Amino acid sequence: MTVSTKNDRLKFFLKDRGIRPLDFAKSIGSSQQYVSALLTNKSSLGVKFIEKLTLLYPELSDYWLITGKGEMLNETKNIMQSNKTKESPKEDKKTTIKKMQNSNYNINESTLAERFQKLLNYLGLNSRKLAMEVGDDSSAKYSYVLSGKTKSLNSDTLNKISKRYPQINLHWLNTGNEEILLSTNNVKTKNAVPYYDVDFKGGYEVFDNNESTPPNNFISHPDFNGCTAVVRHSGKSMGEIIDSGDKLGLLEVPTWVEFLAMGEIYGIITTGGQALVKVIIEGKDDDHFKLISKPKKELIENYPPQQIHKKHILKIYQLRALSHKF
Image (cartoon, rainbow, N blue to C red):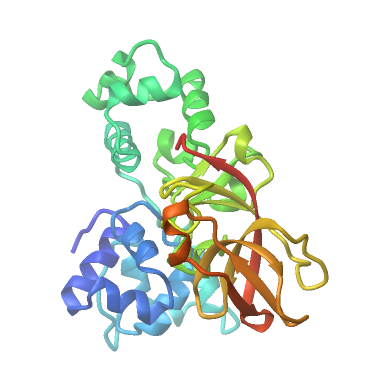
């Protein structure tokens, strides 16, 4: 059974077993956005994720998932089990998966044209728009890549793509090895800030900058330098200052319990998973903050001040930047 990528094989497995994406997201403790990114090849399957996945779904062959070889479902005498008899007793599952992902198993058969088309699909662009985005005067070179006439990309083209889209793995693009996206820790532009394309009301998981909830993109712009993350605002409660759809540059305030400047705009993540944008001032006592909305005048009565107990606050982020550009 041949399915082209690990992500495609995961999608095939879920469909074969009748597992809905929503149920799958719940079973692995991740967001629907992350699962959607996996199933559309916009996010890669890392070692930790595969290890967790095969523990939750022991019938799934990790050998098949990683290499595309053998059978999808484990049997009494499958490839993985026969391989395990040859391994050192001290070798754990994580080590096995890493071995399977090395060059002995990861034989890439994609062409540059196929990878370039996948890149365009990921970015939601065509070759002409990509040329405009990266600052190329002509899109002809990209058309040649898509037609198969160009077999490799020169350093100038790669640098332009990397500068505009620092999350793209250039090694994958030029050779087919590894995955389309760099891990968060390997993004080459030091000022690139992870962007999560979700409403700020989406819950605190969207800010976990790790493998289980990867960002949708990275924004490299002076407005957001130094921010922890960029998110999308929604709603009308802060309409006097912030429009729905604006991008917010947030900086985590890890010491908010000890000290927090009053009268500023903050992002508040509650223990219940709510994400709010409010002005914070002194509450009714030392255990509370008062949250103030800033709606347009005609909506003021709809957004009265709220008291929130500090024990219900998980994280606080200072609003450092606001932009309509993205």
